[in-house]
Amino acid sequence: MIEFKGMVFERGISPTDIDAFLDFGGKLFFFFEVKSGETPVPYGQKLAMERICDAMALAGECVYIIARHDTPAAEAVVLSTCRVSEYRWKNKWHRPEIQKTVMQFLTSARERMNL
Image (cartoon, rainbow, N blue to C red; front, side, top):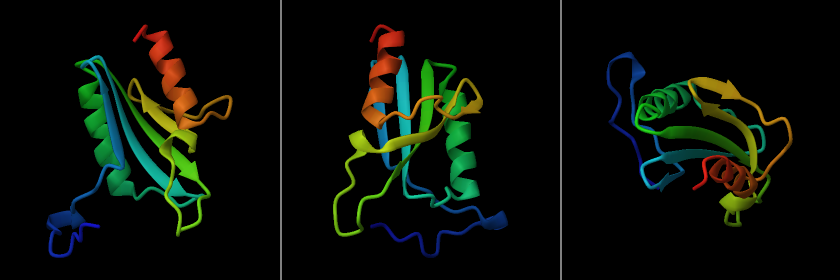
């Protein structure tokens, strides 16, 4: 854990974290935020990641995934089995039509791009 205490700037700007990141040869990028149950993503964190992902999309495809889990607090969260609840792609938010795990989502995205 990193404590962000004392790192607040004007308008409440403060650091955020990234739960996971993947780079497939500079052509396809994935950022992940993983939350328990229906815990909301803080507005500032979501906005910051939207901006990063939208800017990186100029260099390649970039997807910001919000994934959910129901893992008890005492256990490790397995990212591959988390559910994709929404994702940012091509400057828009999307909800999966069919529920997919993170690994299923990544596999289908890579297949579409032949990576």
